Image (cartoon, rainbow, N blue to C red):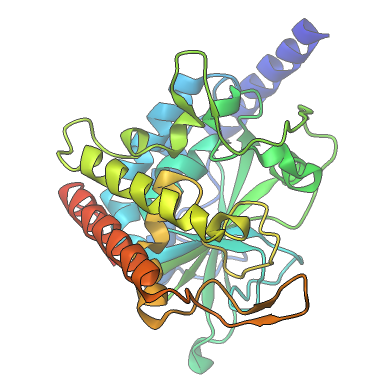
Length: 346
């Protein structure tokens, strides 16, 4: 069975490579033959950059994934063209690109998006670009459609988190045929998996053991791709400081049950979600955490088991100030580390 699956993959990759050699969909025109404008020309540059960085490979090849992520993260085209934060998630309905009402997204710093998240995809070599909405009303969007193959046979620690905690989510990565990039006013605002599903695609079933993190065979925390050492350059002098400030903040935030809501399972249906239980993904909301602690808005108001109302925020002022100082230290270390990488620090 395993060999048959490998053979099918090999044949598929060969056929896709041939198809890519026969030509790319675009050469300066939108689908339908309309002349390209400035934003669609930018979309073409983005599409070619992404495809070149992440060609087809064996779905179990972690080195190919790392190389893809490195190229995406180092791309000046992508860095300059991506909004901060950028949204990542699932398109719920075909032809619906309204990211302001989409409640299935997570916000990330662009470097996390490109190096950690999009690198789990491989691109076939073709793409198409479409413009939707009304330019005169300020609602125009440029959409890039990328057909992809998914790296669904990597080791457990190679994914941003165990997507198979939800069968629906794990299936969406493998059965969705396209990734969509939503560009507005010259910036990539969101990257979405298409709402369409193709259940004939290769599928690798996995069962979640209930752990978001674990220690691997070498003694390293897993998933390894969530660590700052994976995200940042080897010579970044702020990696250790950033990790230490995150660990201190993480320990404090667990005392106030922040990870109960701010984890990939999103039990409170936060939209967009900000993840706190993984180091480099928490980087995306570091300044938000500071603002929330300054205004003392979290934890949210609640009713306890006795029916008593609990006000929002941390009641003990000394505890709130401790949390705030730890959040500020993490945010400042994140700014320094990202600045060293030449990345935006908003």
